[in-house]
Length: 253
Image 1 (cartoon, rainbow, N blue to C red):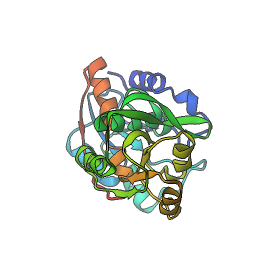
Image 2: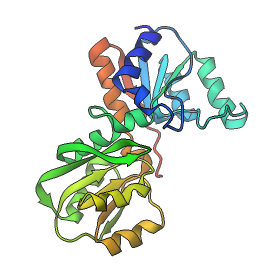
Image 3: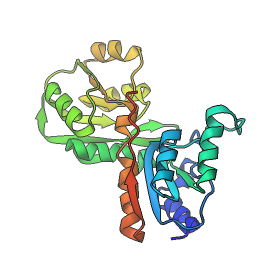
């Protein structure tokens, strides 16, 4: 399909206008490459290894959650940033990046795909950030102990993570905001949830979780955001027949 048709679809499907002025980066096309899209390589972050891997696989488009443009000002094109841009230009690769729109999407978003992998049901929007709900909350039909949930996280997300088992009793309800969202932990308390799951962790979290009797799991920024981009690529293939593959560049953070 034509690149511009794909971008129009993605911008509408992911409701990009809803995050206008609220995200940290431009969503959509960040680097222009080939006009036709035949094969997509997707990944979490547009690092040099992912871009080089896409070129080796004869892709024409790289689809990621974390692009290469952040903040309001254009960075100088030097050092590692220059290497990424050059690798994209050398292989005429499009770079498409969707940040908050992919976090919050109710069908292919990062949070909802994690929730489904864990077996949560009755899914609802959760985790307000800059006036947007960017996460998901859900319920286990059969409540489980926190150590059982920790094992499920390790198996489902390939992530051991950091677990603070400070809640009381079994886990019935969980709030999920992927990536660097430990600052949203108090929202789980306000919502009356048993456990909060995110990617990264800050120093304050252990004390807060213990003193407020909340379970907390940090499963890794990368690991909690591996599945949304794959679900999105699969949706593109389902609708338009464009082939795709996921290239994982492991990151313990």
